[in-house]
Length: 567
Ligand SMILES: *[C@@H]1O[C@H](CO)[C@@H](O)[C@H](O)[C@H]1NC(C)=O
Ligand SMILES: *[C@@H]1O[C@H](CO)[C@@H](O)[C@H](O)[C@H]1NC(C)=O
Ligand SMILES: *[C@@H]1O[C@H](CO)[C@@H](O)[C@H](O)[C@H]1NC(C)=O
Ligand SMILES: *[C@@H]1O[C@H](CO)[C@@H](O)[C@H](O)[C@H]1NC(C)=O
Ligand SMILES: *[C@@H]1O[C@H](CO)[C@@H](O)[C@H](O)[C@H]1NC(C)=O
Ligand SMILES: *[C@@H]1O[C@H](CO)[C@@H](O)[C@H](O)[C@H]1NC(C)=O
Image (tube, rainbow, N blue to C red; front, top):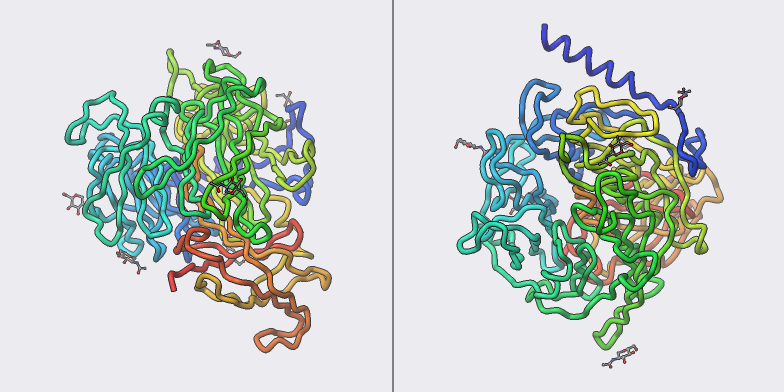
């Protein structure tokens, strides 16, 4: 009987959240037309909250992890599970460890790896030293080793040599020597080929002190193999295999409008590395950080309404030419949002709030994030300055603390999570979480491009494994005769939590030729072919799982899973 009641309630949640198109944001220029403003649709209900998500290669699944939130919609209390982005069905996954605040990435064969986690919560044991891999068939996590220190709010980064760094500012009460409440300046290097333990490396003291916080640092592997490391207000380029500082990054503290802009927990902004491109020989890197909170911010302080963009050129003589941060005004302020770099190189900003701080309850139990930002925005890095941002259609669901987003294999965006979904305030209408504190409803946001069915390229044939420099042909069709592929991209699958997609990377491939004749041997009637060169090396595209997309102008079609392999 209770089951039945629960099931009925779920249907009601779904019905109550249909988009109503009530626009109260004065800056909102979105329309009800999905081909212009995109659209949210409810996908289903997860059993654990999507606090952390990572796409599972070769499938439509997203692996979710949460901090234990009860009661779950299915009456159980597994802290992990698999959400099917196509069907909305959810399956629980077993583990014994506390996993909130962990880092997640992939082995080169596509297996999901989970490093670090949380101190004991509910029935879950100390997880901060955990090293686990996802056994998809058995629906459980397998412990394969232990970190040397406990880490949480930790970024896991897969390196070109297949090893993984795990980095966070965390007291390490379960570590061998350091005491609680002492900053832990060590990051760890895990080799999946020898999984039992790790090697320790020391971070530069300037980074530890000047960043102030290095929870979930924004780490990107540069085309040189070095690692861009940014946290809050400070960053460096380091050699991830030694910890040595290779270059210092500029600060924005002297830029008047950006003074005080802070971007790491609890002031969380979100960062991307724009696509790496053959047109500049994969030598130019642009990093962007969107939003955050002012260093003086509290629960009602308006969030940062700026994005910052930095250009780094990798010189042939091994040095870097580093520009200065360029600020741009966003259509609305945003803290605790997620960024999704789309296959066409545009950035979708989604979730989060217009006020407050990423964190749990303030005094009196009220939320620390307020005025949910229901409006996703798009940033087109190639448009003229001042015309790069546009506002899209709104969601009815507040996604504040512990919300997530990730690109699906079909180019839509899975939107999940939120576990302080009560006791915030909002001037805008919305559909409250039917379950109060935790938000189990999962949405799909379809950006406007996926509605351009005329120009959308559909892959008929593409290789499923790609070797560096390899020349290969991809066969596709499009409804419109005029639709010819203008770019071919490898998108690293998403691994998102706490505003940080720690596996974010888009690599454009060099197009060697396009053939719109119908006489290609592999082609069906009416199909077209594009011939590309594989990525130049492991530094530009570390071996592992990717999603391959074809792009026509701004429109992209459904992707296909591929693996970049070592040889
Ligand atoms: C839209 O929101 C406003 C402000 O909350 C409310 O007064 C109005 O009734 C809503 N309109 C619709 C059509 O829901
Ligand atoms: C993507 O589209 C294909 C074909 O329609 C479908 O089989 C698949 O389930 C979809 N996956 C997702 C994640 O939407
Ligand atoms: C959890 O712990 C129990 C008891 O120690 C053990 O039998 C079980 O295999 C563990 N499960 C997982 C998924 O690690
Ligand atoms: C990937 O590698 C891991 C570690 O060697 C192994 O446990 C796992 O079974 C492999 N997965 C596949 C699909 O081969
Ligand atoms: C924050 O703003 C809300 C809504 O105006 C108000 O009720 C609350 O008292 C404010 N809290 C603080 C700490 O200023
Ligand atoms: C390296 O190359 C850059 C760009 O050409 C140049 O500005 C710089 O001076 C060179 N540095 C050294 C040490 O040669």
